Length: 348
Ligand code: UT7
Image: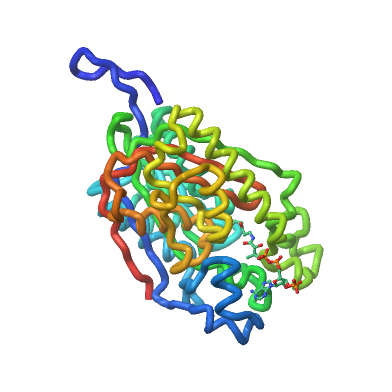
């Protein structure tokens, strides 16, 4: 935030403000019952251990860029403006090289704008919000479009029930612009962190410079996304709780003051534990994990779009977002609930 003179005598604090929101989900719904035979699981196990009832998976051939393009364009329509920078948070880029964001920008019709991917796994959207806000305050751009998009079905092992029942595909996007800190949608503070000593807890081992395809014939274990669920579970609760406390202390808000709490939809038990530890009343907690599962970098914008218009979610409401993911990475952000009408699309 920066001090700025207004046209009158008063001094206001400028801030990045969310002006538009768009989401895109694949049309295909996969219920827990659909997965019983493949993973030797049950609807009861998945519901009680994760809170997930169904998720949406793309048809083969649909990429992260496809979903991101639709969500990004929808956010611009929702905002009624174009963008001059594109950030795409994703774990599942269309290709290892180049980044997916430039192609998405081009497909949206944003010719020649700077565009880059953000790689922070499930924390990508919160990291992207911090980067977008910094780009505005440093004067690099005026209207960044931030997209969180994933096709997790491209990296999960079709035989691994530890990840196969959890993850879903989807995309969500927001358009930010410079505004006033008192406005709906104004972003107030961040608390971000990482712990690379635990990078192996969530990883795809092969295919990078440490184990290039050139040198290794990767085992099944190393080719796919792997997650040490129990350890990740514990870390997710600790890290999201502590970063929420940090960001609340930076804004001077008590947890009682939080009117809208939206967590990365990792697992309903994790979300509940973080909300309980923070002491946020259940009436102020929002999410959609039952319907879409864990969509990684797309999770927060998808949950936010779903939260818009619910009882008590009014423009300006004090809002706390938090996320945790591979890296390890985590982060929280305090903002005013935006005055936006999210645009929802299904991808065929
Ligand atoms: O998105 C960001 C990062 N990700 C997360 O935050 C996810 C964090 N982790 C989790 O959500 C949970 O650890 C999981 C949902 C992945 C797993 O739940 P859990 O309660 O931690 O289960 P577990 O891995 O400790 O396994 C308990 C039992 C095992 O059986 P035994 O060894 O006790 O006989 C597993 O084999 O549950 C079994 N199991 C399953 N059973 C039926 C694991 N997955 C399944 C399944 N269906 N899908």
